[in-house]
Image 1 (cartoon, rainbow, N blue to C red):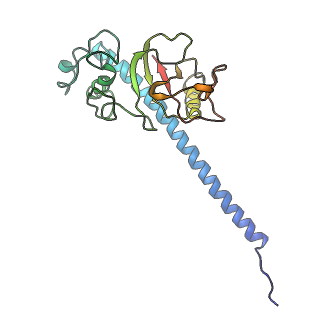
Image 2 (cartoon, rainbow, N blue to C red; image 1 turned 90 degrees about the vertical axis):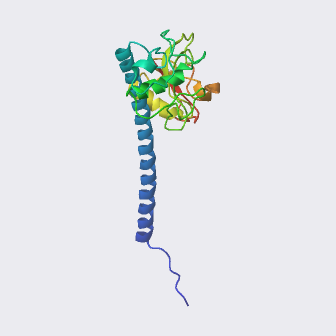
Image 3 (cartoon, rainbow, N blue to C red; image 1 turned 90 degrees about the horizontal axis):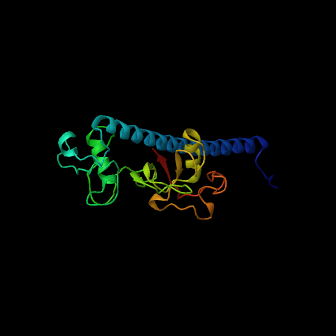
Length: 219
């Protein structure tokens, strides 16, 4: 007669401890990835904003809008000059919101090498950690009851709403419809049915995050 053998309590406890450690490691890894993406978004917004004002201080004009870029920016002889009207626009013969990145990179205010083209792409425009294009522009594509055109830096879309909630809490008021950082539909993001932020309170959706959201920093 064979004696049936099973797991001892000690063996089961060891297995449970190992499973707990693995789950803890996965959750910690996800937390680190989230924190890195939040830091990346904040650093990029701060960096471009500093570059924008640094360029303005040096050349007394805005990147992309600068009419003397080919003459005064080193290595920018083949760049596109702007019309110097004080607005970085995405219309007309020269798409200033695209040429802005070449002006900033050639002037040494941002890292990377961007070359102007008539259509925005990663070769001429930075991307966010989720692979979507960002945008530096003078427009009114941001959350407000009556938005007025102003210079702003779009994060791009495909950013989860809980990530934007953490970014907003760290640098602003935590609301998608107020303060300096606000929700934006640029890139195809939508707040239909309040999927990105609650239109009543302005709070970003954190408990049930939506994957395709975006924001912009107002200057």
